Image 1: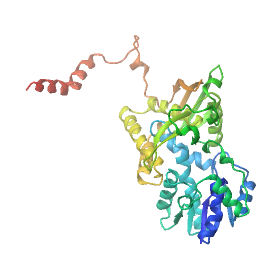
Image 2: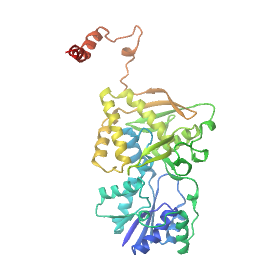
Image 3: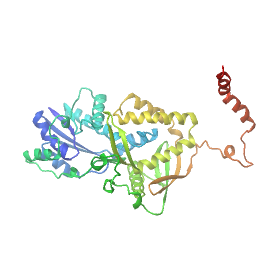
Image 4: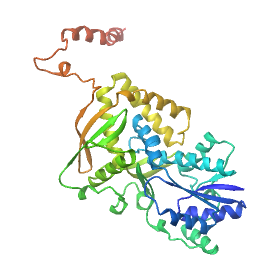
Length: 396
């Protein structure tokens, strides 16, 4: 049997390699995806090989991730439960897709992951596999084994003659990519407790942000950000620049209790400085250029899109259909937005677009006003007609 493992290099997935070899008499191929910050490729490869992996893949997927997963979600306005910008949820289908591709290329029989039985990521990996290659077996060792503590995992590796620096022995469980950071566990498991300062990963706490605000201008073309302060940038560079600016000014940290896919509530802290700035900016462009009813429906569908992605249904016809609807507006979503970053806030200070529906001649209260005030009386009578009829019949 041959198995492709989503390998992070941490304690859990390093234990999984000898576990799969023993229990399934399997050849294990370790796969690492670079989506943000990562350990050195040679270090990861050496660790996987030492644990018993017969093959190792390391792919830099940052460009693919931002361009084909993060920016499409941005164009839909997808935010899960009014807070989470889906950083981890967007990464999992890409990782799963590449695992399945490697499995196909190498003739593997199964893929494997290190997710727990109550997490969201197990659903995301396995639904991706069901969508792309239903015949491929999925193995989840953490749902099977009795290594239910980090101490047991460390002892297990020692029995195999392996040692690993236990970087996960700290307070928190952290997942990090270019679009955002997820922080959970430890003191964060009590929703009444304020997140301690050591739970801040990149975003500055409000009391440590600069005294002076900073203004930033973002340019969009067809719904995708293309420039910062007039400088054209590639996708990855642009997100990294906004992550840096946002983190400095304390932007993009969300503390929320959310509903996981499996039905439990979980307290999570997220940091998405660059994504937060981009969502705020693109929403302003939308309000400027999109017709009222179209914007209303797009906002409504954005919630369904966010839930589909969160629930592991990236490759579903629902997600793809909503994406098509949202992208039908792309040709209008071009322009510039000026924002001010200060003390954990993002404030819009200006917006312009060649497709703007704003008309000063219609909006002004000066002598330049071209709005037909006389037409308002008849409009109001017709608009309120159902209410009048309702009231007339109420007594009867």
